[in-house]
Image (cartoon, rainbow, N blue to C red):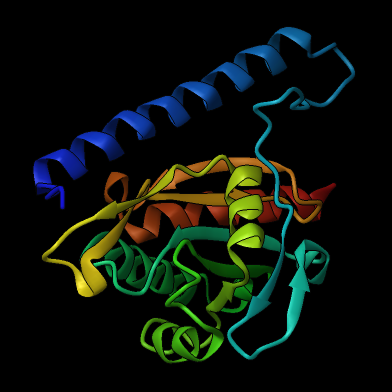
Length: 213
């Protein structure tokens, strides 16, 4: 059995994170290039990041992106056996929601598992309760989760690891996606790049802009 070292894991995630960042920058460049004087920026092409999924929430209810269409989405992909990135990021998202206060009513915070074999609705219900009462855990079949990850362009990979629970772990990028109410991409963040107050301010700015239109 191949042993995956922490350094190997970090290298994989770093490389894929850089690839996603490059894709986002490319989308922005294309959008700005194609933007006319009286047109809004739009994103198109195979690399488009979008909120599109058919999953099951932590209460056992089948949901799609349409169930959150009236709110902005703050989306993070991970798994409950994740030792570091996931709990840190979810706690960070909880802090952002607390800082937003009543404005958090306009946000749907979503945690999508990349490990549906172990992360059932029941497991997710116990897990998300540790971070924030508004946090929604999402799971599904392998195919459903893979389709959701593809829509968001999320890197994930199962790695055999004799030291991990059940002898495997899930390598994945640590991005937090901010999606508009129509499911289109708005921005991407990483927990360590700014304090929760700064992200709450970024979200507030967008909410106020939407309200003024």
